[in-house]
Image 1 (cartoon, rainbow, N blue to C red):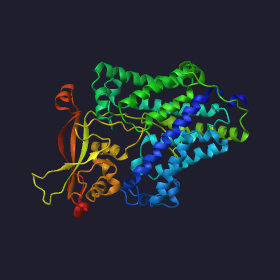
Image 2 (cartoon, rainbow, N blue to C red; image 1 turned 135 degrees about the horizontal axis):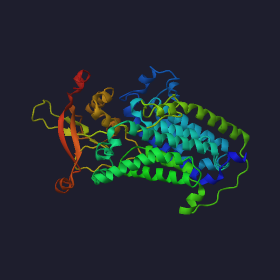
Image 3 (cartoon, rainbow, N blue to C red; image 1 turned 120 degrees about the horizontal axis):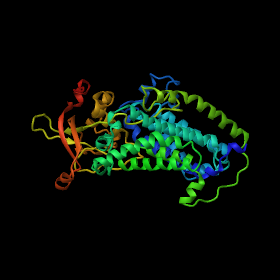
Image 4 (spheres, one colour; image 1 turned 180 degrees about the vertical axis):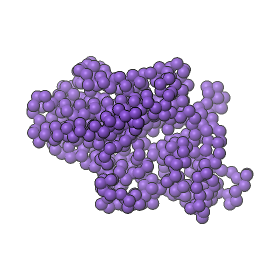
Length: 482
C-alpha cells in the first residue's frame, strides 16, 4: 500500500495536529471559564431548559444523559487536559489506537458542548474546529506515515473554507466587487484589535489592493492546493500569509488559526526545509490494515457528504457557516458577505440613585473586548473567544439578536451576579449592586490622526438613543426593547 502513505508530509502533519490540539485547548478553557453565566443552570440561556425541548438526534451531547454545572466544568477541564497532553506530544508517544481514541474523545467532548451552547456557540469556527478535529482521528501519529487520503481531506476542508468565503463575498455586498469594503471593515468588524485603527487609516488605494488580494487568495489560490509540488506548498503559503494579515487586523477567535494549520496539509517537508531546515522523519513500516480500512471508509463518507456544501456553494442563494448534520461534519463556510458602513455599540450603564431624574449619574460597565471607553485601545484576544462581547456586536445591529439573553444579562447585573461579572472588565458597582441599569445605543467611529493626537482617543462616539429603558429588579419582567 505504498500509495496510501505520504512520508514527505511528516512535519506538516506535526504542525497540523499540534495546532488543532492547541485550538481545542483554548476552546475548552473558554468553555470552562464562561459557561456558568451564559448557559449554566442559572445562566442567561440555561442548558436544562434547552435540553427539555431537544431530542438526542437533534442535539447529540453527553449532557442529554444528565446535566449539572459540575459535570459541564468536568467535561471542559477534561477536554483541556487531554488537548494539552496532545500539544505536549503525548499522542505521538502512545500506540496508534490510543492516539485515535484521544482525538475522538476530544471531538465528542467538544461536540457535547457546542450542541448545547445555543446562540453563544452559533459561530462557524465551532463547526470548523469540530470538522478539523474529527479529521485528526484519521491522520495517525508517529507510529505510521501520514495517510495521503486524510491529507487530501484536510486540503478539501481548507478549500471549502477559503473558496466558500470568496464566493459569499463576490455574491454579496457590492463593495466587494468595487473593491471598497475595506474602507469600512476594519472599523465596523465585530471586535477590532490593537492594530485595527492603523489598518483603517491606511491609504484607500491600498485598501482596494487588499480587497483584490483577498479575492485572489480565496477564489484562485485554493485550486493550487490540489496541484503538484511545489505549487501546492506555494498556494498554502499564500493562505498562511493572508490569514496572518487577518490575525493582525482583528479578533476572529480561532477561525484564522485553524485555517493556517490546515494549510500545512499541503506543505511538504522539502519546501519547509528550504526555509527552515527540517529533521529527518522516522522510518515507518506499512500501515496496519485496521488503520487503513477506516481511513479509506472515512474518505468515502466525507466525499459523499461533500455533496451538500458543494451544492450550497454553487447555489445563487449560498448560505454562510451552515452544518448539514448535528455532528458538524463536512460543513459549509463563509464570512462577511455584507459589510456594515456604520459601527453601533450597545453601552450598558447603571446607577445607585433611588429616583431617576434628568440629572441622574449613570456609570458605564466595561467589557473586555468590545469597544467602550473611547480612550481605550482595543486589545488582542484571538484565538481566545469572548462570547458575550461578540453577541453584543450582533445586538447593536438589531435588537432581535439580543432578545433571548439581554434582559437576563441586565437582571444579573442588578444582582451583581459573580459569574456574570467575571465576563466583564469593569464593574462600576463593586460594593453593592446598582438600583437601575439601562442600555444606550451609540454610533462609534475611529478617530482621525489629528483627533488621536489632540484628544488621545481611539474612538469618537455619538448617542443615537435608548436601547433598553431603565429597569430595576422588581419590574424586570415588564421590561422590553424599545
